[in-house]
Image (cartoon, rainbow, N blue to C red; front, side, top):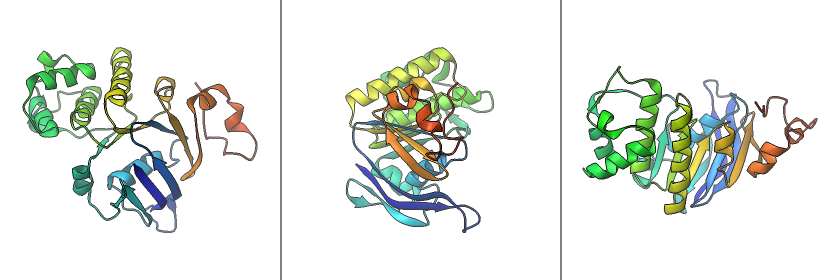
Length: 241
């Protein structure tokens, strides 16, 4: 279980908090989808959990252990992983190498399976170097494969659908379902996509750096007035397309 108590994250100007006094409990074996307007604090909150952004107030605990002061590496060792919206490139490193590092073993069958799970033909990609020849969508899928390889306690995905074609996106949603079924991993996905929202056990709505609600996907997708009710949220909180 991951728990956040009174967590705040300051921007470049310490007087402005991009995440403000967040209290949240994330249970094992559940899928949480974080949604809300651009600039509302979704990614900042996820990066605070990973340790990429330091928190200015509050604390974070994992399975009852205070991890607030742990570095990114320390949190990764505890079983937290993060898939970036725009993954880094690793010149000189091959896909096979990255999956081996992530999984801790050189199981080729496992590597092939992981690549298939994210919509990549293993024979075409397993020995490719992670250089400029990779598109953003291809890099995204490889990075997600490394997250799946690690059998994490908490897996954070920042808009995993970005740059991915429709077929691969469908395969990815199936992979999230399978991961949820076969592991105790807490899955946290930042997304506005309806298919992703429908996977959620709970949807976390963030607006203006604050959690304005935690509810079910049916409420989010079925009642647009829920988000536009005067005085409840700002008018940018949720937009259905």
